Length: 256
Length: 279
Image 1: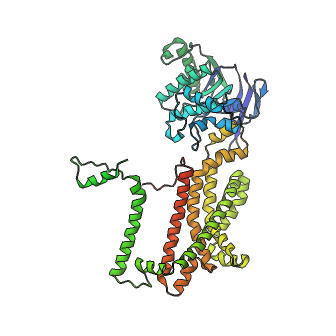
Image 2: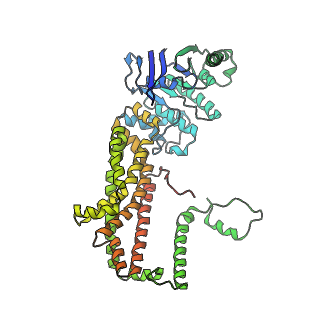
Image 3: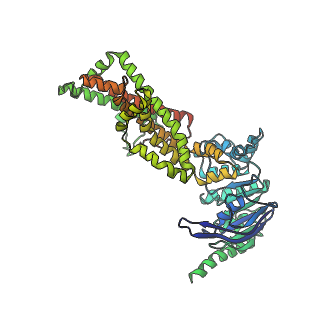
């Protein structure tokens, strides 16, 4: 469904240096597949996500979604950011409905759909609350509902649980898996956490340090439905071990 | 929140002394305390004037100011009304000019580089010096007074609106772009609402400065208004009346400021009120 073909991206810094963020990345993602992007800081994970989202122009190569090259943000893509970035002036329901309002696709059924999503993430009864009345985890749940409200076929998630405490993080990981089971989407999920990536993904894409390249794509054969406690499984350990080796092995290599 | 009655219990010391201070109810902190402070100040003022028999032409006692000011209530009210009109017109023009100007300033670095020096120039000109010149240019009407009021008041407003418009988190802008928003919807649906707390912080500064601007303008060119009243009454040694006008101006500043605060609380209850005093 998503074809990333020989994509490179460089930025021009303030002193006019060209900084390569991604170099010749190719990746093919199937419909309703859950793919995690893992790599050290600054390897261009978020950049790759934004390229797929059409939020920034690419320098070389192309991203093709359903046969169409991505040139601008696509209506059928939902995005979840590292921080919830809710609108402080709108209540929970209006925050969830925001993308529909912006795209002028609000229908009489939209609020019902938004309420169902809020129910799905355990926020029933909170629709009239304002963001500052919610905890960080609840705000992130609202952010996820907002990304799903227009029923996109692709969900891009940029370290969505990175700013949450460990317990909330596990809780939301389970919830995300439940949401994904009930409403299958093609998910591209950026994370720093190796266990999180193995827990969530069908395949984990490990990127090398700057400029980011695909170091290896690791299939995760841990059976679904997944839950915490499966970390002890051989399949889990093998995948996590291989990712760790790719990331830290490379780093050690540059030290000596 | 503690009930109001619990405060009086401090007269009976608790068995185990607590080091933790009890918070006072909000209405006492926000209403009673400020009024009590000001009332106390006037009492001390009155007492000092009487005790040391300070001559009225140096510092008149509050009671003397009250008598002089309420002698011709219609007259003082008329001057107050005239000044209020100038203040409000100048403030209105400031808002109408500042909003598009701030949008323009933040629209592109090139536009900002072109306009910003002009803005700084308007602030570098001493308004007191400019006022008589403006009278020559614009005539002895309300217009030069409104222009001076505007010039004094608008600058902090432009700056706070502009900083509000650019302080939107980049992810929110990306969200807008992901929802295929154009520049206009981005401005009206994301940037402007986000800037509301900043806009109100600017409005509070601007409304206080508008009072200053109106008085400056009246000093130079007016046949009415509180600024004019202060000038004429000091010229005739009616010092009590001048002090009365001064107090009315202060009250006007406070009332206008509180109206802005109230508008923010009523219409934008989600706004954190970024410049609340840290109590």
